[in-house]
Image 1 (cartoon, helix red, strand yellow):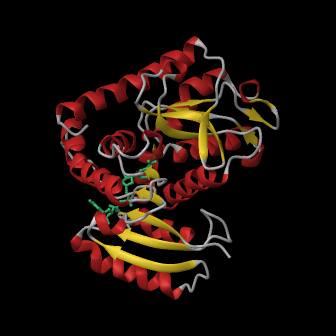
Image 2: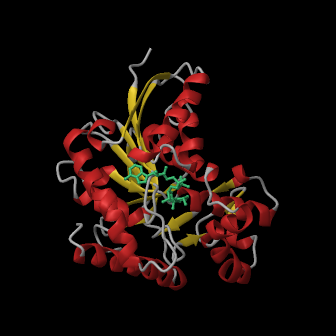
Length: 327
Ligand code: NAX
């Protein structure tokens, strides 16, 4: 049997944590043969609630759950972590400007980056879920100079899964028939859900839907899905966000299926003319624990405009956190 791996999760007593932890512990993320040690980080006032979650995790008697550690100190929670899912973040409050939001999150992601740098496994795979996810990932990465920049990723997988689901609904085809769509850019309303290479049952998706529907409805429905969930549920997406985090980490660790790609927020290497260093959603394939950007896809003028607009937003966010001295 395999040795247990260490999975750190921040914001573990929150909504997403409540779905995520049980799925990690049951083997959905790293495989049904991989024991895990959960290392859970919360702020001090939430440790009591976290303890209740730990009681429930124990009560599931998951065969793969080797141990559970809880702490309010990132140096403890990230110790030797092989995987780190950074979920806890500072939500936008009414009247908050982007700079305020980025500053508040800098107070979380800078020390967490430093702690990962100091104590995590040298091969740690980091996924940032907490918003603004792409720029929070950049802050953590820039404060972890001894780790490879590529070890820091941001979640656009929920957008990717939403995009699949919306297309499946429109075409009346099962989600499993849909391949190779891409979420480019920021996990925000400027994201670009791109169907230009997507297929449904092996046939081009854009031959099966109306171009007007795609440009005028589909893109904004996917980009605004988070707000629609809040409106309906009175709370932000949680189980679907946890499921997307599982998908992101599973594919990164265990690989994507042959001939298919997924979307991950990763540091740009300049591919597709995206400014180097931005944490940007790209189409990627994964193998042996590494991801690679899918190269050579044609980019129409329509796509170019959308890809540049979301890159521009991320550049502005980067400028803002530079001004704040966070990166
Ligand atoms: P909750 O407010 O339910 O939970 C967040 C938890 O994080 C709280 O328990 C809080 O005590 C904890 N926390 C705060 N600061 C912390 C710190 N410094 N260290 C450790 N823990 C800390 O939020 P939830 O609904 O779980 O959402 C978490 C984050 O995910 C939010 O930032 C949210 O905006 C973001 N999302 C990102 C998505 C994505 O696609 N990238 C989609 C879903 C979600 O909206």
